Amino acid sequence: MMEIRANLRYWLAEQPTVAHFRWDHHAWGSTWLFLVVAIASYLLLILFLKIVLLHRKNPLPLGPIPALHNLCVVLASLAIFVGCLEATAVEIRETRWIWRRSKKSAVEWIMCFPLGTRPSGRVFFWSYIYYLTKYHQLFDTVIWMLLKKPLTFLHVFHHVMVLCMCFVWLEFSQSLQIVGILANTLVYAVIYSYFLWRNMGLPYKSTDVAARLQLVHLVFTVVAYIGLLGLHFRREEGCNGMGAWLFNAFLNVALVMLFLNFYVKKYYKSSKAIKDVDSPCKRTKQL
Image 1 (tube, helix red, strand yellow):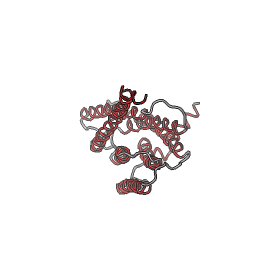
Image 2 (image 1 turned 90 degrees about the horizontal axis):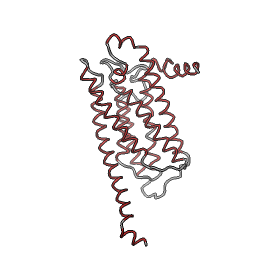
Image 3 (image 1 turned 120 degrees about the vertical axis):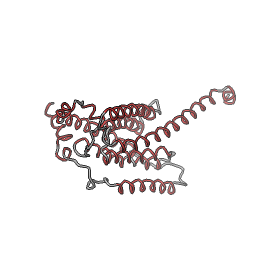
């Protein structure tokens, strides 16, 4: 068991590619131009599919493709969660002496990177892998449209926003990204496991699992933001990447407003449909 643990730690945190990772413009997808072109291509693909599928009423038979896609997201999310957790533990172990001298804790470092932090090392390697998976998750939209499901602005905005957010994390060594990666990958693993369960045709009761988990995640995000701000203003030097954090905070506020609007409308329609079915006039007509 100890040997398995040691091998796992080596491949997730101590292997040279991981330990000596450096975010620069030689890494794939690391330029602003690449990000802009990728987002523009994604939006053009949506427009193209809308035109091609405009007169098609029935969904395309995709077979096991949606299930395989969801399985890939689940496995990638779990791998990144474990990898980031292990990388964080190793970083804490190796730099503990610095915190003892400055009277700071490991939790403070996880929440608030010190000024001058560069995007290199184990944690940023897993942040980079997490960023790359967001390109794979754009395939969600293609599957959604081919299945002729209604595409909302919230769906598209969420994918674009997360892509920008992950890029900014790396570009500006933003604080709080460790918490963000761990929380997001855990939530994604659960949500896409639920999607996988449904794709396999297995029985399920609730259709609001994803929405409820996202609401819980949004509440957790607000709490984490409050904690970060507390650390930033308590420290004399503040936390690294707070300008990037402010940009992401505005994106998250917009996402929360869109999500709550969508969720309230959906809940209102469901409640109205139930009232219509249960009304005396409706029951009389059915009889």
